[in-house]
Image 1: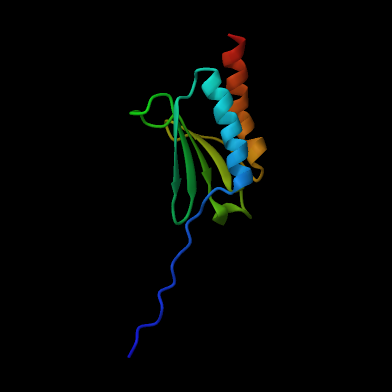
Image 2: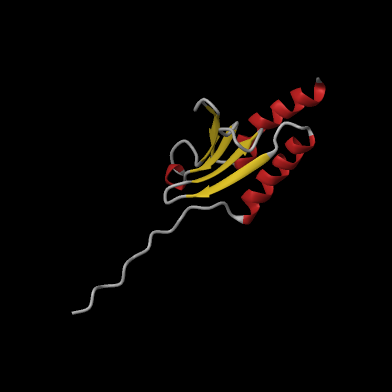
Length: 109
């Protein structure tokens, strides 16, 4: 008797449009000298884009995508180094504006 084929669970990942928006912000923050490295994790229930000031540190911010929250508070979230959710919502561009404001403060200094 043959075993039934295993159903592989899909990993959650950022699509091309989402990565374009995130990497655009990342490029501006690198140019401002605030960020230096990033990492992407594609897990079973979420995708995470982590940004670092230095490579060997904990991430300054995590941009997370949780598709199972799509119909609730929104599948995108920006989380700070200490775990505080800075912004959550349905539109990635709007959620990332919390980091855009920080960029404007850095440039204005």
